[in-house]
Amino acid sequence: LTSRWVGLSTSADAYTDLQIVSGTAASEHVPVGTVSLDAAATVTTGFKIDLDSSLDWISFGVNVNAGYLWEMTTAYDSTTTIFDTELCNGTAVSLDLGILTKIGTSVKVGAVVNDLLWFPITSKRTLYSKDLTTGIVLDEGTIDDSWSALRPVLALDLGVAFAPPDSGMTLAADLHGIEFTRDNKVPFSIRFGFEQVYKPVAFRFGAAFREKTSYYAVDLSGGIGLVLSWFNMDLNLVYTRNEPLNLGFSMGLLF
Image 1 (spheres, rainbow, N blue to C red):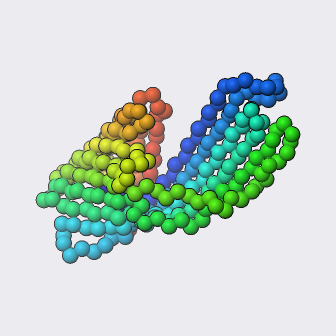
Image 2: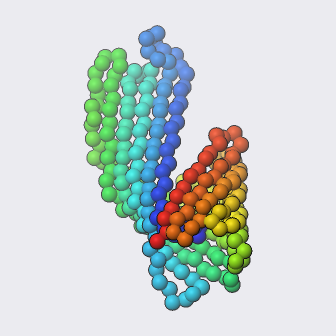
Image 3: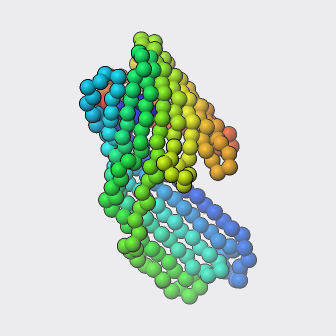
């Protein structure tokens, strides 16, 4: 939680999901069953604004984020022989509010309200569809003006860090995805981390418990970082049972 409140940050996420449902085709020339492909990509950048406080044990900050979302859904149903494709994209600006308190010289406690304010800038959905049996085009780039991107769920993150002065060591624990509603749209997770800095090199290890559909996934991570007064860089590896090995890389400039 404390590391996200410095400098300029940029992130990108993408996923694809291919599903094939077997069935019985009426013709040998028609693919069997239903085939669908979903893909999405999100790019977000942001910066922090410090809010002055007359008290030295508490500080406030506002994160200003700008994001771009692109989604594609394409599907073919052998029953209707209609091939559909849907493209959605949009941009938005959001604000996060954070508070950081100091307890003594070694303990910090932080809280972040994510997407406290959210402003959609552009929203667009384009439809394409064709009947493969008759060859009739049903939609050829039809624009759906009624579509708009969904507002992110308002959620709270909490964190505590223990960092004795001049030790270079930090122990941290975070709770992510505490929702203000009962919709349960944000996956809940608990994360623990350890960092030891031997300037300018930092070694990091962590464990996380992430909420899945019917169980909690356990992530184990380890990484190395470069820590300078104006620049930081991280390279980490995350292992999760029965999931692909993840390699992460990040860089940041501090102003």
